[in-house]
Amino acid sequence: MKRILLRSGKSPYDVLSVEEALHRDVIATNAGNLIFSDAAHKILETPGTEVVSNGIGTDVTAAARINEEYDAFVVPLANAFRPSFESRLKRMTRLIGKLRIPVVVLGVGAQTGLGYDPARLKPMEQSVREFCAAVLERSASIGVRGEFTEQYLRDMGFRDVEVIGCPSMFLHGRELDVRKKVPELSADARIAVNGSHSAVQRQGLDRIITRTHARYPNLCFVGQNISDARQLHWRDLTDPNARVTAMPTHPDHPMYREGKVRVYVDPVTWIDDLRSFDFSFGSRIHGNIAALLAGTPATVLCGDSRTLELCRYFEIPHLRLDQAAKDPEAADPARLYAQADLGGLVGGHAERFDRFVRFLDKNGLQNTFTHGDGGAAFDERMRALSFPPGIRPWNDTDLASLSSRFGWLHSQVTVLTQDNAQLRRELAKAQKAKAQKATAVPAPATSVYRRARRVVGRPLRRALQSGKQ
Image (tube, rainbow, N blue to C red; front, side, top):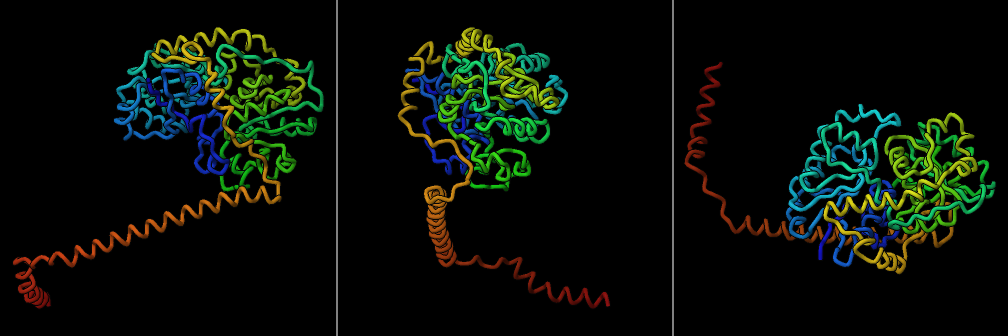
């Protein structure tokens, strides 16, 4: 049995309560991370392969254990080549440098503006070089998200670079069935909108959301950040993101008060819920990929290179956010829906999947669609599990809503009390052992030097003081 260690926040099979998921931040600040890590888990799980999640953290000291227990380390990444991720990229490089097993990167991306200018990435170029060099010493090639990242790495001199997109799009293998359910969107259509705090605060997405909310009563905003989830579940406003009151996940926003907001901590419930929608749009790439995986048409409002290059590669309907912000009418859901051409997305999917499989083959990785049951066992196991529903705004005052939250808090208090009691026992034991050791071992005799110093020191000091007078 081959064992693969997969970098992911949690295994797809881990069922956690909402409270525990938020407490542990298993989404690694963004629920979109689980979309592509769950897909990678499913793709790599074959009858002869066990896939194990290592959590999202990087423990450099675990290298020896990883070498001993695993046959490969697979690293699905998103926009890892960005300044705010540099310290984590360096830690990952240090870990990879200690590994003797193959290391395969799935779909890493560089993040800059829509103009594809890499200037802002120049200060971290050395970190990117060291990471890619470490990976390519342990794999045949490195998989990137799209055209910009490919050119960015080639300009550094790396040649073993392949555009493979993101593994999330291959959750269903060669099949991707996305079609328009209605000829056109009416005012009562079920529409999902998504977006980041930066897009809302600085790129004009707030005006688009406000306008759409006024026109479409069945609009629902789907957030992705851990801060979004904590605002919905706990009304927690301690995160800096809470300053963005125009975000629908903020308790002061009308969509929050109307209950028209969700955040998901499991991709399976996220995708399942989006099956009942007519359309999805917004600036979140994986928020819209979740819709596409559900068979629901989607349009991405691209605000940076990471979303733009992925949309271009997969031929996902898209519009530049800066253009849409200038003319909110251009981002009206009915108009986006009418303009959305799904031909290239669906028609070119099989070829892109085959390219992805060739990348896996080259790097010694089997996949369930070629070497297994097509993911049937994975899907069956997932159907047998009961995941928590999407998080709703805390507008409820009913007993059930309060008891679920405070019941978890009470359990945490109990655990902390038990931990404190154990620590007190261990401290008392250590203090007792120390006291026993102190009484059992006699104090060392005063050295000859110290005795002489005491005898001679005082008269000498007096003599010196009298001389000064």
